[in-house]
Length: 229
Image (cartoon, rainbow, N blue to C red; front, side, top):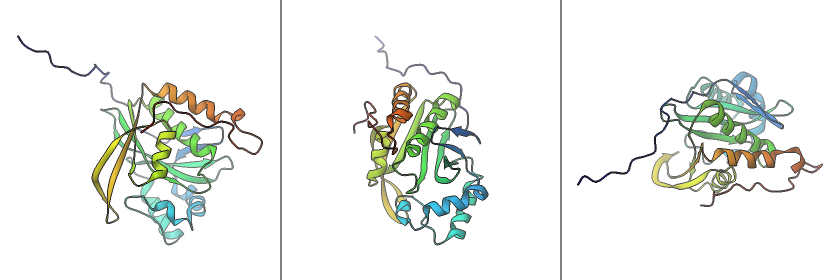
């Protein structure tokens, strides 16, 4: 008798789309394709004197001065993978960067990474809304089925953020990289298209204007399901 082998569920083989130069508008700001001449000065003002934010970047930063930062930023703008976006606040000031990377349209897999949140963006509604806008774009417009978040396993802040944003911890790849001459174990997180509707609803509940008081403080915390490590 021939045994039957287990196989995966059938999947639509149509490829996802590649990210493009879109503007993703939110209530507290927007995410738009990085433009070094337009965003560079604001970004430098937001990150200068905050060298600690570059600690877990694998290959760049901190930068000695605006000229060095500008040269680096100019190299990022034309890249298709990673595809870099500026995070812009309600006043029009660029305060952070995020990229869509490791882009695999045929596998419908993509990652959010190279995330640079200046102190002006950290712990703000826009910091969360930017992640919501990117995730919505990835799943609903581009058609990906797996959305990844990876970080240095020692980067506790990034690991907490991944869980808060609804990514599920999958494990640690040991001795995964050599980053700036040091060992890096990498923590893997993911979100699936089947999980997105519930994550989306929680993002939108938390981001709603009535969840914040007159001083802009949250009334209730974000509560993503099934993200405990």
